[in-house]
Image (cartoon, rainbow, N blue to C red):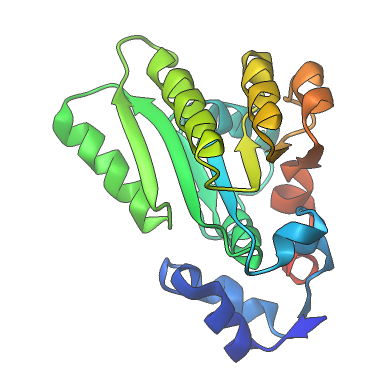
Length: 222
């Protein structure tokens, strides 16, 4: 299955206006098989509902470790230990017409600094960034607690059929199991080098973002 550039831009909607135009143009007539592999068949239909939940702290810190000396992926939005998002992941999300991307992180600083990070995430294409004040060097429990509360709350209200959790900590295992008991499936997207084996096992599916970000050619992604 292939999309031309014009049709691809229409399908991607807001991603085409979030600074990803260069990536979309480079794709041309490209294969969708790798992007589709991230979603169960039912989630590829426009009538079905997918939400993304991102532990931005965990994601950014693990991204730094996994990246090492590798080149930065094109069209990346990154602040060390605070957030990471990029066109390659955004375009994959667009394939399933994701309802909303919930992104949670924290940063040291005043309200102006929190607003600065929130604005940067919105520019990256994140509809619902939640940025908390960080009171210590690493992490904020409000990130974990808020992500868990909102992901489970949306499941209870039947707002999605598939939750994608971008996180790697074993602490999320009880959340995944609780969401599954409500009915939805949970897919974990993370780095195979950094994900907890217990979290990977309890999820309905796991997809390694290392391949998408650091190994795949643009023409393989979409």
